[in-house]
Length: 107
Image (cartoon, rainbow, N blue to C red; front, side):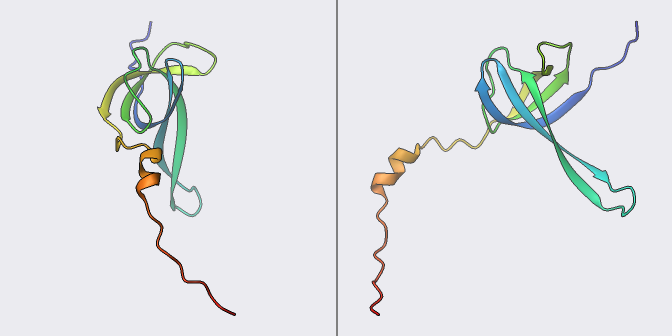
């Protein structure tokens, strides 16, 4: 048996609509082989979220694991930072907002 370490990535949860599964976007950079410009890439991983501890917008640490399903090969280890949740629903804002009056143009 090889004693290799498991890969660990840090990313942001972009979807939590599945049962016990979240989609984590991990951003990384690479250099273009010819032009040497730094290119930003984003890879999306399906990660197992057993206790449903993270929501969309959270920054999480994921770790490589054995295949858990067709697409899941990662597991959420910890939530590093909670997402920016305002706690206000759009329906609560809409009735209180009064649009400014716009003068009509006469032609």
